[in-house]
Structures are given as C-alpha cells and as structure tokens.
Length: 54
Image (cartoon, rainbow, N blue to C red; front, side):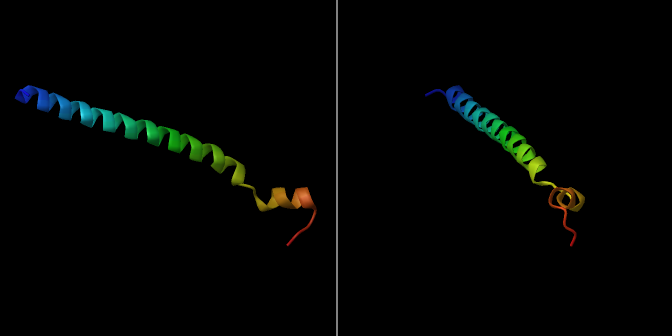
C-alpha cells in the first residue's frame, strides 16, 4: 500500500475512536445526571412524608 494510505487509515482510526469516546461520555453524563436528581432527598422532605423526627 502507498504511504498515504497508511496515514489516512491511522487518521480515520483516530477520529473514529475519538468520536466514539465523545458519544460514550455524553450518554454517560446524561444518564448519571438523570439518576442523580431522584436520589437527593432532604431530611425535611422525609420528615414531612413520614411524620417522624430523628
């Protein structure tokens, strides 16, 4: 294969891996942000819900 084909294949491989990592990180952050909001409850909210203190 000519030299330019080697360079082009390595550039294509690098870009593909970079885009794949970027998409994975975007979905990971979106998934983590969505589940993190539901887990946060304050003590006051729990006291209102169950009517107990302590």
